[in-house]
Length: 342
Image 1 (cartoon, rainbow, N blue to C red):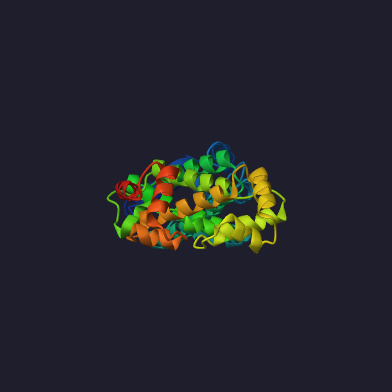
Image 2 (cartoon, helix red, strand yellow):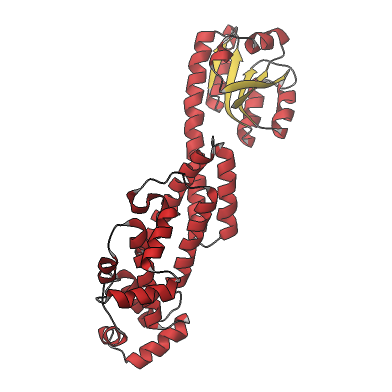
């Protein structure tokens, strides 16, 4: 709903505009306030900005052009429509230069007002989308920069401002926002796509309920956990290369000796340095990542356990099944069942 303020020193004219039949056709607008001059209007606008101001040009105390300047300088309204007499076209022209949305000759004609209102709807709709887009980008930026309090608060504000109709619509919007965040993370960390589960598309079955805020937060936290778990933030170039290799080649069947040979370094030294830098053993790090990859395949595909094991470098399905159970507390079959039910 867009709020309109009418500003005119003539009470009869304000009343005529207020009672025009056209307002029944445009339920998106409501006349929420009136003022007799620019000074009174400005006082109200400073307390509560309006989307639309319809103001006469010639008024006592403060005229419409002066009011327009104040509105533009302080961003107190999105659209200002000037009302003028036939003899005031020069003033109307000045108003357009100053940034008025449009002007109308008094008395207001419904047909032209309808045209103006339709253009305002398009303009404000486009402006709202642009504002939402900027806020969404700010959410993504704050997520990438690990500013949890910032992006969490901004998500709450954006949901409230968008006035989503119901939980389903909220879920659809959060899913799209989650996709934006994931896309941006993938640009910087391509490997994250191999372990990020899109739960609402499990096994190609459309979930009965759309993702809700709690599920969205769970997925976001899981992504953050994975980023923290596998991202190396130190300055050891060798360790950085080893981590990058492991994360970008989960299908490789590698042991400590093979990795040390690949990077021309003593395996004992590599093992010690890796544990010192990341606080976790190299093979444990690689195993954890492979298990996360397996979880994604279990949740999103119909691949058999043996296929999944081989896809991440394990020929012995039973052995990998034991590793998976040790890491997750569930068998691969149990994990898949629970993922589908989620």
